[in-house]
Length: 237
Length: 318
Image 1 (cartoon, rainbow over the protein chains, first blue to last red):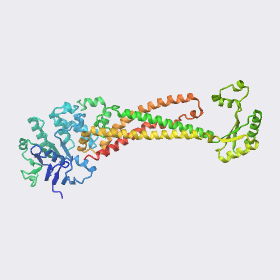
Image 2: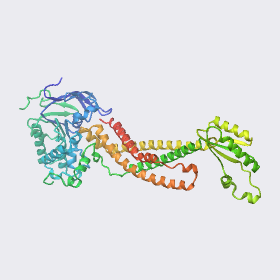
Image 3: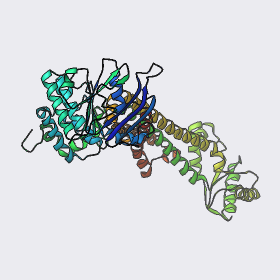
Image 4: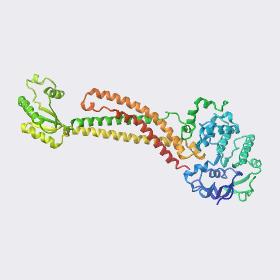
C-alpha cells in the first residue's frame, strides 16, 4: 500500500557488487513528494550506490523498492524507460555526450521522450538562459569549464520536469558562489514541486536549506539524524 | 543567436537537415559520432556487394545459357549415316531424310551440308586434307531433325526404326543425351554461384554483427546515458541501424558500380569468343534488375542484422 505523498519506498534493501560484501545494507526509508533531501556520508559510505538505485541504474541484491506506485524490482525491462523519465539525474562526472553541443545535450531527454523539434527549441533555450549559458548554446563539453558543464548537466536533468531530481555532488566542481547559485536553483525547482535528493559531503550546504531532510549513510547503513525519514514533517503549504 | 532565436548552426544547416540530425532514432545518427563512408565497414560492404553481384551475374548468365541451349536441343535428334562410300552415303542420307520427314511429330529436318561438316572437323584436322592426300576423309553424313515436342526415348526409337529400315548404317541420338555432361557441369557451376551468393550474404551479416558489437562497445557510455534519460532499447537500436544503413547504402552503391564494370568487361570478352553456348548467356533486363537489388538487399540485411545485434546486446544492460 502506498502512503499519501510517497513517491519512493525502500524496504530492507541491500546491494552488493558481484560476490563482494554488501555496500548498502538494510536500507528502509520513504521519500515524499515535494521534499528536499540531503544524502550525506563520508567518501565510500555508499552515497553513489544509493543514488544508482534511486535512478534505476542498478537493481538491489535484496529487499523491495517501490517507485511511483510500481514495484521497481519486478518491473519489466520495457517499463523502465517510462519510470526513468520521471527521474532527473545530475551525475558527479556530468556524463555529457562529448560530441553533442550544449543545446543537443540539454535537448536529449526531450528527444528521448519523443517531443518534436518545434517543442524542443524554446524550452531548451529558456533553460540554458536560466542556468546562464545561453551564449554557449553551440559549445561542446570539452570547450566548457567544469562549472559550465555542471550547469549543462543540471539543465539536462530538469528539462523534462522530472518528479524527482537526483544530484550526485553537484557542487563538487564549482566555486562557493556558483555552489550557492546551484543550490538556489534546486530550491526553486523544489518549490515548483520537484522532489530533490542531493548527495554531498559538504556539511555547510545542509545548513543553507533549512527545510531539508537529511539522510546519513555510514558504511552502507542509513542513519536518520532528523528522524524525518520515519516520521516526515507535515507537508509545506 | 539571432533575433528570431535561431543559432548560427541552425541557419547554416537549414531547418530540415537540422531536424533530421537532431531527432533521436529517426534521424539521430549523430548521437553516435561517425563520419559517413569512414572506417572499414562501408568498404567491407562494397567488396561483399561487388563479389555477390559478380557471383549472381555468373549464376544468372549460366542459367540463361543452359535454358537457351536446352530449349534449342530438347527437341533435337541427330541421325548419322556411317557409310564410307560417298555416293552410297549420299543416297542413303536422302532416303533416310525422306522416310523420317513423314513421321508424325517431326517439325523440321535438315541435311547438314558437306562444307559445314568440314568446318566442324577443321579445328582438329585442319583444311585441305582431300587435296593433300588425294582422298577425302569419310566423315559420316548428318541429318538434324527437329521435333515439335521433346525428344523422348519412344520418339527417338521411332525415328531409329524408320532410319534402320532404309539402312543399317544409320545411328540415331537425341542431342540432349550427348550434351548432358555439359549441362550437368553448367548446372554445377550455377549451384556454385548460388552457394557463393549465400556465403557472401552470411559473411556480410557476420561483418555487420562484428561492426555493431564494436560500435556498441565504443559508445557504451552514450548508450548508458540515453538509457538513464529514459531512452528505450528500440531507440538506441534505431540509431545504430540507421548509421549502419547509411554505410551499407554507400558501400553497396560503390560495390555495385565496381561489379557492373567487371560484368560488362567480362561480357565483352565472352562475346568475342563467338561460341554458341556462351552467346546464349547474355543477361536480360530482369537479371540487371536483380543485380540492382543486391545493394538494396545488402543494406536491408545490414540494418536488420545491426538492429537485432544491438537489441540482443542491450538486453544484457539494465
